[in-house]
Structures are given as structure tokens and as C-alpha cells.
Amino acid sequence: MKMKHFLLPTLLLICIAGTAQDTPKNKKSKPKIDLTGRSNDHLLLQAGYTQWTNLPDTLKTSGLSKSLNAYLMFDFPFKNDPRLSMAFGPGIGSDHILFTKRNIGIKELTPTLRFTNVQDTNHYKKTKLATVYVEAPIEFRFNKNPDKNNGFKWAIGMKVGTLINAHTRNSKWENRSGNLLNNYLMKESSKRFFNRTRLVAQARVGLGHISVYGSYQLTTVIKDGFGPAVRPLTVGLTISGL
Image: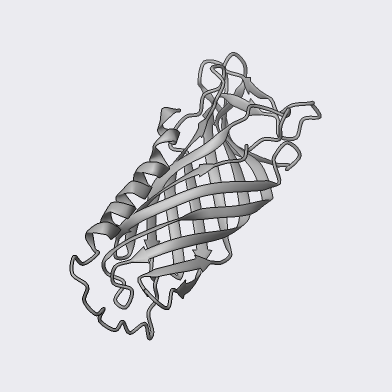
């Protein structure tokens, strides 16, 4: 997907441009900034639209696949310029990829993870593949109004995570003609085929408590040789400063 090559660089250029415009032309003494009691994005809640890049032609996702994240960040302002800071902290990140009329062999004793097209037999109409990670993001931040947290801001960084759960959720058992046979759920869980560690590049830019973020996973979701070398690309919204 071409989008992955310019998403994060574009966000970074917007951030740098915004910072440059805020730089005064004349050398004046900076007003003292009182950071007492500021929240400054300690809690980040994210919801985004996620797609797998590098999908083979024989495999298609469907519906609104999504990413849901929550982080508690500790922020450390620079002494010479409190508008700049470094932040890091723990959190949970999850991706939920949707498929239609596909059997995902997450618990099959096969050498690779199989995504079988089952439209010509009885099948589950909808299948979700979810991966959940404990993560530790680190960000370099700019906040135009760090004392009030209501102005232009941007952040760029990385996050590393470890896999704690991988499961499928299958619903609506139907026949090949699409007639519902049974409206029940089947869940299967296994981490066998998946990379236990992931590394993600991310950036966000916004105003006040709302910002747009983009992220791209540098490591593959599935282990090398165990399936397609897919990597999630996500664009979404961040609510921060709560």
C-alpha cells in the first residue's frame, strides 16, 4: 500500500511547520510558563481504522477493522523550553481485523496459518482476528501551550509491545446459500503463529485534547515463514489530557 510511504513523513512535516510558525522573529524573553497541575496528555485513548499492508491477492479483509489503545504516559518537559518534552509509559494496544467467509486456522496443527475460503460450504459469516499487546510507547512532544494544554501540539515516537493474546471470534453459522443455520459464537485462542514482539512507528498532530494519529508496524504480525508478511497501518483519533 502506497499510503504507508508518506503517512508518517507527512504528519512529521506538518508538525515541524507548525513549530516553525510559532518561533518568534525577534529575540524576546520567553514568558514564564507555570506547569503546576497540568495534565499534558498523561492519559491517551486511541481509536483507529486499521488495514493490513502486503496482503496477498488471495486474501482480503472486510468491514471496519480497527485498533483500540490506551496508555498512561509520564511527561518530562525540557528545562530550557517547556513546550518540548519526552514522554513514556505503559499501556494496552489491540488490533481487530475482520474477514468474511474465511476460516482462520489459529488452532490447526499446520506448518502455516491458513486463511481458508469457505464460501462454498457451511461456514461462519463473520470472523474477527484480534491481537492484544502490552506496550511501552515513547514520544518526543511539542505543545504550544503546555500550561493550558489547549493549543497546537504534535508528537512522534515509537512503541514496543509484547503479545499477550491472539484469538478469533466467529459468528453466524450459515450454509453456502447464505441462509442462517445457527446464530452462535465460537472463539479460539492461540499465539503459536504470531510474533511475540512488535515495534511500531507513530506520530500525531492536533489541537487541545483531540489529535489525529498514524502508525505503521515495522515488524510483521505473523512469524516469518508461518504466513503472509502483513503489517498493520492505522489512522485514527486520539483523546488526551484527561
